[in-house]
Length: 333
Image 1 (cartoon, rainbow, N blue to C red):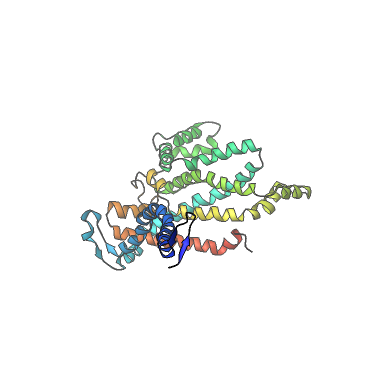
Image 2 (cartoon, one colour):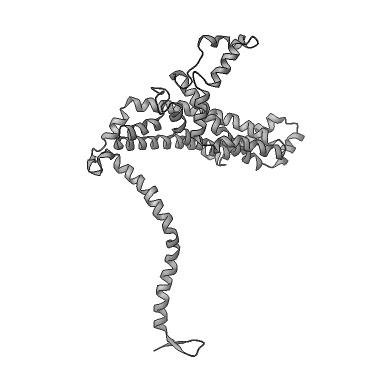
């Protein structure tokens, strides 16, 4: 039998050495997966399984209070009922309106604001960037509750300021017409609630987009600005012909996040309308309606179908945006 000499002068059969190395190699290969197993298990249970369960659930009716035994297969009935539900389309329209009202001003203001900040001294720029970013990291529920108090019809500070401006001699020429309609129900009246919710969403996320654009502007070589200044370009021309084209990847990233986030609006309208009590028609988003179907009506099958409809709609909007602006936004021709 062949043997392998070792330093001690003894001989260990090669067959036994190979047998020992075999389990060790297997153990070495499996060790990384062992360390990853807690994450993989948690991700599988709370990430992968819910997705497939939602697909399965959308083809069934199920009241969770009655247990799994109450689940019944209905095919595409949940999708058919949802697509013919006028409330679904009304809430989708509300979502689109508030997404546009809050999303477009975010970027129209964040872009020039970021350009203004990047032209300031570094110390002042950092302080102001932090101040603008604070609303984004503040709890959405807290922000919405503060604005709910400010929007209060009877004791809100916004109505109080408007009432003062309407009565003051120096401003009555501009605000005097509001005396007949004050106090305004900012979150109670369907004609105003979309604007109120959109303003809160804008206020919270405009700082986030400002930080994105500030980071993008910081990557632009200042020699380009100096060369343009020598050639006689003013601030607007430098912004239009240098900053804006080089910011396309950052604009594409920011707008994509805005589309996805605004189509999923839930917290702000839910808190401002006190769980939908003040949102009979105009203030309820499709996410609020989805929540109502699932947790108030306990119709989990229909809620799952609505969630997949919303997923497809967001995918369509994002794909259309990517189709028209994706190549330019990612630096392509």
